[in-house]
Every structure is written in C-alpha cells, then in structure tokens.
Length: 297
Image (cartoon, rainbow, N blue to C red; front, top):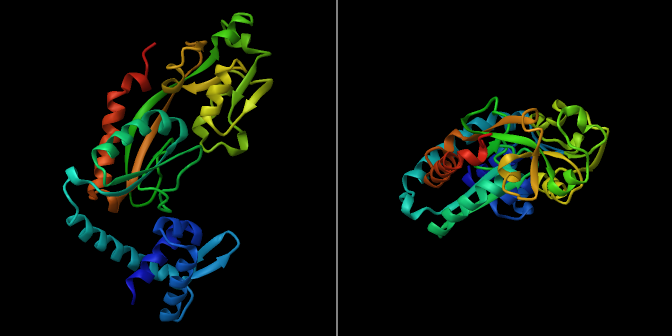
C-alpha cells in the first residue's frame, strides 16, 4: 500500500473537498484525484462518495480512516523527534483566528517570530468566520466558542472587553446619550445577521433594539472604520476601538460586555516544535496585553 495514496486520502477526509485538500498538500487538485483513484483501485472499493458539496466517506472509507490516522500520528511522532531545536524552527504553522483579534493582536506577534526564524512560515487566517479545526484548516484555532468534541487540546486564551462606541464628531452633532432610552432614533453598525459566525457576538440587542442600521458588515474592521467616519454607533472590541482617538465609549456602565477566546489544536500537534513555539507565543502575547484586552474602567 502506497503511503502517499493514504496521505492524500486522509487530507480529503479531513477537508471534505479535493480543492481544499490540494491546497493543504501543495499540489494540483487533479493530482489528489489520481491518488484517490489509485487507492480505490488497490482496495477494490470506493473510499469516497462524490457529491455536489464535496467528498463523503463511504463505508470502506470510514473503516480505513482510523487506521490511516494512526499511521499519520506515528509518522508525525518520528518527524517530531527529528525536528531541530526551537532556535532553528522551520516549516509552516497555520493559525485560524477571528479577523479583529488576528489583525490587531496576533499578526504583530507572529510576524516578529518569523523574523527570528527565517525557516518558519506563518499562515494567518484572520477571517470573519469559524476556521474548522476538525477538517485541519489550521494547526491552531482561536475561537469564541470552546470546541465541544474531538481529539484536541483546548485552553482558555483570554477574556476581552467590548463596548458601545461612537465618533466624537457624531456625538457632537446629536443630543447627549445618558441612558439606553436615548439610543432611540440613532443609526447602528453591526454584523450581517444571517452571516454571523458566532452567537457570542449578538450583543447589540442587550443594550438597545435598533430601529435602523446605517451599515451591516461581516468585517469588524469595516464596522470600526464606519463608526470612525461618523456613520453611527457600534459594539466593538476595546482592543480595537480604544486605540482610535476619534472614538468615544458610549454608556460605559450599561454597554460593557466580556467574551472569551479559546485556543485549540489537534492533540497530535502538541509535540511539534514549531506549533508549540507559536502556541506559547500566543499565550505570552495575551498575557502581556491584558490591560489592552481587558481595560480598566
């Protein structure tokens, strides 16, 4: 049995599509398809059912998967034993993280790590959506929900604060806002409801049910810029908005929220030197920025 066939099978099983697997493997999707076809010919049975949404494991594929996962874990253990010490980190580490936190907090830290280790490549997926760890879209995932299942290592990374903000110019042009009832009639900026990737971000209605929206966006960075231009009010992370001198907290006592970031990785990655180094860096980074993430009143 050709190990490369099995390795390609494992990536397709994890990713769900040939295209996603090919990106993870760094090859063309036709190469992945040929490997799967060759494996099925050796086994004498199909391992995937081809569907419009992707590739779904057949019964033969489900029987094969745990054995291939065990082989991959053993191979990884051998590879890890041969890895260089942290001073010579090399290879790729892919981090999945929410857009705002990834851009403001994570990117500067991992960029500096890359400067110290020229052989290390960091893929930062700073996206306004959930990055799927079970499908191996990333080696480390920082999310607003704690992973509920699977062979993963999970830690609470940090709590962080969100508040209601408006531009100074916007507030100067409107009547004072001293209580939640004063928010009536104002325009708000928020997420697109049916594209909201986490229920943890459904915050605005805890303060006020808006009558109108001036902008809805999947991007918290876009929301921030819209607030800064005076387009309306929005709930934003303090680590993003407090650094902007154009913005002011609105109803600081009534409109304050705390949410949690969780960090996770597949259990088989916990001994890989490059992944361990990034994991430790991220924990140290949030520890050093505690007052930025959880500012005092």
